[in-house]
Image (cartoon, rainbow, N blue to C red; front, side, top):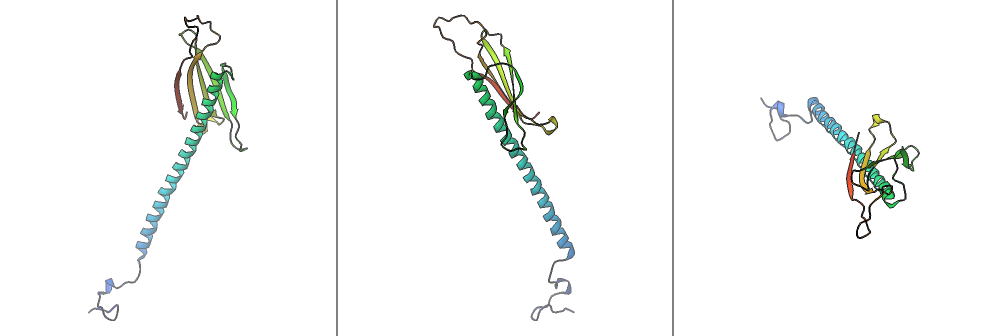
Length: 164
């Protein structure tokens, strides 16, 4: 015998329901919770990578600036270790440090200058580090005069950046 769910239709008793079962609601909430967890993790990774890219771009600009000062003669090409290059405007932000390493090359009159820029953070926090190498004319070396009387400085060497 069939019951009537409405006045005009006759439907079997199992098909005559008006809402969701508890199992369906729990399953929908579990799927929603999983989706929120995945999206939250994706947002966290995106923010971390954006901060890394921002710090790497800042380190590159500071490194290029300091190397340009050396090439322009404003800063001497002498070894320096962990000197402050820029303080942050925020009081809680760590400063940027730079180091200069010089190496006399086998080519007469050339000097290899490596400038490295890093955040003043402990190693456990994996601070951003960026380095540039450039070959420049060594002003301390005696150079033989060329037939035209001019000499040209060397070009750039290499650039590297990364997380230690």
